[in-house]
Length: 254
Image (cartoon, rainbow, N blue to C red; front, side, top):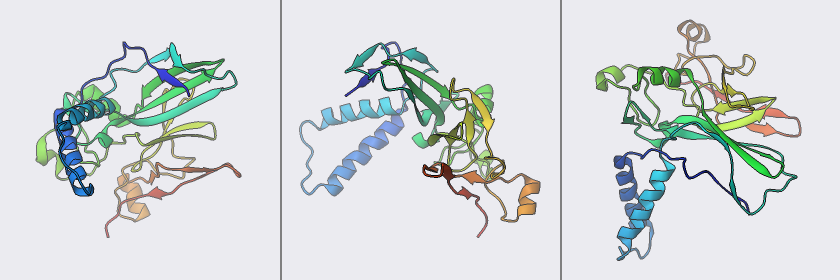
């Protein structure tokens, strides 16, 4: 068993209390619904205190991009272990002090842990999508997200806006010397596996088309208005042939 711990100086921001309260109520309701004998014990307050702490830790914005060697290891890292482990997930849950409506609307961050000579090195970087960079420059939310987060300006600014922010926060794969950050409703972003620098959209050698996945279903019209095709975030590598298996998507009327 190996457990890696980050330096204690690394801190994360607090997640919004509204989400914690909804999670607390949902957990209590679920327990009452699905338990055959479910009563609120005298330790219920302590239970939710620990629940709040765990949820707050899991859904807190990353304080910064980091890179460091692990200085404390429980167990021993085998010297034979060599390579890099990549993970992806939402890591930024607010823009301009305004929180997202759901954790899945957070901006994606790639984390890599490289193993060599019995040591481990961590690096994390936000996926620098075009939308992420625009919102960081503006200091406010400019795009709607699929899990209910709205752009700034109220319902008037959101009513007819069908644009979506490429969150690049769902999955990451390394295939064909490409490190790809994936999200269900748009195109992959390619990253440099050595330093996690964002290289830009990857259209998989022309299989995908850049743009919003909302379209008419008519290829010529969609090409004129800039509608694109998205790629599945859960691609599968068929190792016997080293082929990448996936499907693309587009939302059309009817």
